[in-house]
Image (cartoon, rainbow, N blue to C red; front, side, top):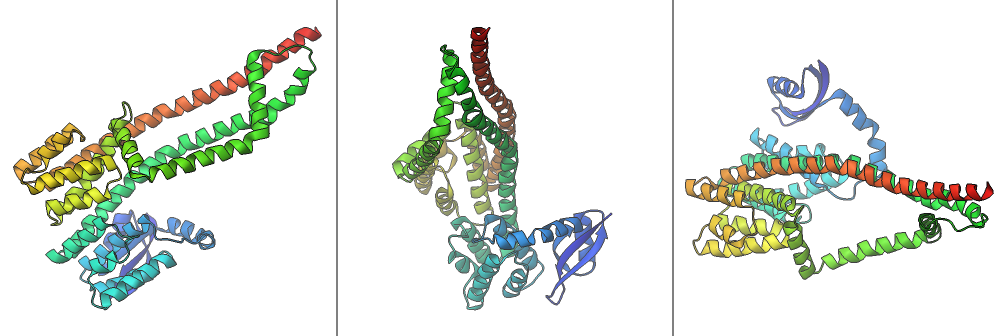
Length: 408
C-alpha cells in the first residue's frame, strides 16, 4: 500500500485535494469516485515530492510556450470534467486552477473568455493556431455538431496519448546511443587535441621519419588543436545551410521522396508515415468528419510532402466516386498491406475501425524495427569508436618503437 495525493472536483464544482492510501493509481481513483467526487489527478506521494523539489528550477527556467504534452493533459482533464456533467465554462475555471504553469493558465483563460462571450469551443481554439492543429479543431467541431463533445475529447485524448507514448519510446530508446556516441566523440577529440600533440616534440627530435599512420594522426591532432573552432563553424554552417535548403518546397519534396524510397531505412519511414496517416484519418472518420474533408485535413498535417501530394490526388479521385483504396494503390506510394486492409474496410463498411487497426499494426512494426536498429547501433558505435581509438594508439606506439630502436 502507498499514499496517493489526489485532486478532484466535488459535486458543487469545487476543487479538492487530499491524500489517501491505496494499492495502485487505479485503486486511488476508485476510492475518490466512491467518495462522490470526480477524480482529476492521482499521483503517488513520492512523485509529488520530487515534482515539488524541482519547482524552483522550473520557475528559474520558465516555459515560454505551451507544449504538446500540456495539450494532452488539458484534453484528458477537460474530457473528464465534461463527461461528469460540468458546464464548459466551469470546466475551464477548474482547468485554470490546475494549470501546471503560467502560459497554460493564460491560454485557458483566453479560451474561457471567448466561450463566455458566445464563441463555440472550436472557434475559440481555432484562434490559437500555433497551439491547436487543424486536426484538433476539426475534431472538436465535429463533436459540437454531433452533440458528443465529451466522447470526442476522450478519443482525442487517447489519440494524443498514443502519439506521445510513441515519441517518448523513441526518445528513451535513443538516449543511450546518443550519450554513447557523444562521449566516444569527446574521447577522440581529447586524444587528438590534447594527448597526441604532446608526442610531437619527441618524434621531431628522433632524427627519423615516423610511420605514415603516425603522420596522419599528428596532422589530425594539429588540425584539431589549431583549427577546431573553424571545424565547428563549418559544421554549424553546413547544418544551417541544409535546414535553409529544406525550406525550398522542391528540395523538401525530393528529400521526402528519398526518405521513403531509400533501400534500407525507406520502409521504416514509410511505415511511420502510414501509421500516422491511418490513425489521424481513422480518428476523424470515427468522430463524424466526412471522408473528403478528413483527407484534406490529413494531407495538411502530414510531414512528408511526397506522400501528401499522393493524398491530394486520392482526394480528387474520391470526389469522382472511386473510393479510397484503389486510388491509393495506383499511386504506388503506400505499403500494400495497408492499402489492402483499407480496401477490406471499405467493402465491410468499417473503414474507420480498419484504419485504426492499420495504425496499430504499423505502430507495432515500427516499434520492433526501431528496437532492432538501436540494438544493432550500439555495438556498431562501440566498435567504430574502439577502432578509431585503437588506430590512434597504434600510430603513437609504432612511432615510439621506432624512436626506441634508434636510441638502442
